[in-house]
Image (cartoon, rainbow, N blue to C red; front, side):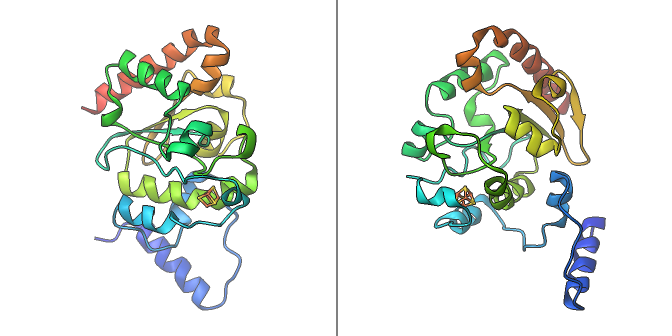
Length: 224
Ligand code: SF4
């Protein structure tokens, strides 16, 4: 049965077919998810094939590996960070360095194993010198995250760090205003917390991160 969004996508294709070129500006990630008219891939393997030689943004020039993400296709919980770092770029896997070890500990704290959740980043190639990804790089890479979310269909997304939080929630608010609460979206709930790399630099923020994770754990348990 066709959903409302299928109907909307058909209508937008019709508008394009009759020459309407300007579609609504992508203001929110949720709208981006809904208005992405590209044919949905069937599984993550197809996304991996599609991204394999991606040159959509300048990050392709300096990357060693594309880091698409890791974890089961069937999961209710997805973690989204900012971008691969040096270790991730070298190994082609997300969160494998010191920050990754801390993420593993964080998951343990709430009784989860890495194998149970899907972990990815907003952009899939390492920004040089571990700088934050730039807006044009985020925009270029978002279709991949959109596809991952459509395939996995998580009920809960935990964003790690400011870039992920602002991208998923389509806001410019600071992280301190976004964390510590549940952001209800139509298809999923979002919990915002600090990036593990930030917690390595500023360990005193682990107390607040723990509060976020307790919130995440409660929501996750409610899903079961
Ligand atoms: S960051 Fe994303 S859009 Fe840019 S080259 Fe890598 S995969 Fe392509």
